[in-house]
Image: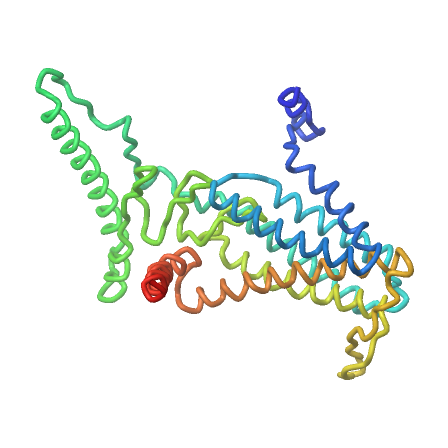
Length: 350
């Protein structure tokens, strides 16, 4: 019955009804229920927010460890943004806000959505295509004579595979030599440095700084990581769009949370710059006396949690980028030192 229900769960779409996973619809019920309960009182809001943080960390770790491709986190992100926009535009007392502040928030939010849209749109172009050549194990030359024995068969198969891979490497290197053309000195050396390598999983000749994504099941050019929130890989062509999207999203969430809290709480003036006042919330003890103020306060706290997570991810990405590495390369370089430090600790306590 469950399989039949999942198969019949479809929505109208261009070109025919499209099947929808229950995991993609679950956040549409969880997010408003969580925000509605968090608007009841301060203790409920604190417990739900802490539970949300633990559940998110556990879900991401589980998806990363099992290499599960899911739309749950992308759906969670879409429904969260949708509900935050609705609450901000219809529940927050906009008379407390300046029209310029609302316009700036809308522009920054639109820029962030566009950057993430471009990130997801360019993600398929990061896949290593067949132009580098493939050598799947089932297409390797077989052994013609079965009576030669198992050892001779294994040796011939190994030699055939090695020759096949070497031939493909020579073809790719010949193409690179033609591309060098009139490149001289340092430029030619830098291009020769980007020689392809062989992926041990999909048996493809891939360019350097490429890595295999277990979730997508393909090699990614200049692989950084797989973003479960966008349900795509971050690589060579969409890395800058991803960083720009994180930056604009951080600004939008912080600005939206500040405008919401200063509208529902008692604000105080920090500084006035060029005639524009900069306010911060002072006393929010009365927000749970009214449901509209309470849900606005809960959404602002939820936005601050998202801003904290995005800020941590952005700092980590910028630190790796400043060192000239991707996040995947940074983890690979720091992992041996972590293991060595942990082994030294265990030896010390023994």
